Figure 1 (cartoon, rainbow, N blue to C red):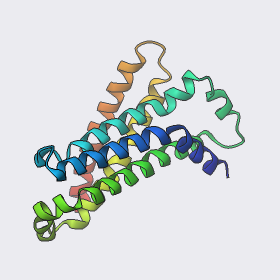
Figure 2 (cartoon, rainbow, N blue to C red; figure 1 turned 45 degrees about the vertical axis):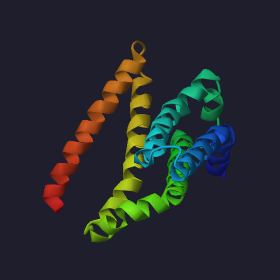
Figure 3 (tube, rainbow, N blue to C red; figure 1 turned 120 degrees about the horizontal axis):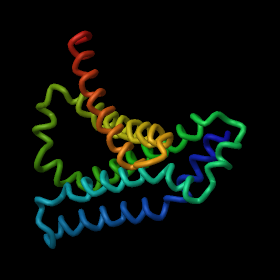
Length: 183
């Protein structure tokens, strides 16, 4: 029950920025179709969207710390992982919804340019899986880096960046090792 309340709280807090980003993306795609912007830039809103979601990811726990509401969240009668899971679930679901809207808005361009290439790909399931799992993995690694750096008193941002980079490197190395073992 509290999980969904925290999830809805995240939507209420970030709905304006999310709708602004989505609206600007749709307007950009429509301007691309009308010829006001070159068609080579149709992927620019998606790339900027990924950047904005990375900023959302960084600020999701920092915001609670800045507004001094982290103690309120810690006093809830649920474990801390439920609170973090609700926030991560919001990030992941909002990113997938944004990605879905961008895909629908850009479908005509994608269909003309790349649909035949997509149909010829033998690893279509793997591509779809990567599109959905990669943002989730990035969110989890960034949250881990932020939480791990929370225990350092000085140079918190620097430590957080290093932990994210090292954990990403370990994840890549571990995935290639597991790919050889199971593949």
